[in-house]
Length: 90
Image (cartoon, rainbow, N blue to C red; front, side, top):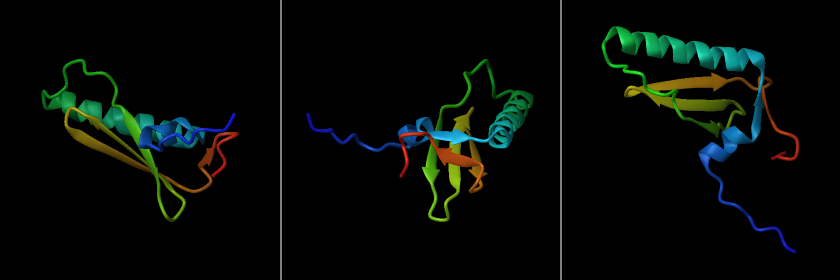
């Protein structure tokens, strides 16, 4: 049986990496700040957490993107704070 290549998507990337606790904490803080700002402006009404996507940058950092109440969230995860999950070495 031959392996069937799967289409690469940004969501696939985020599902295939491991993040340091520092990176996870930074993303949660960014989401909390955005939610607080949106709530204060009356823009947030019980919306679910943002769907995140990730892109590996040419410098080796990982860019995580999300949206909440129309506000874009971005976090650059430095090299060393993320890695490919076992079996997903690139």
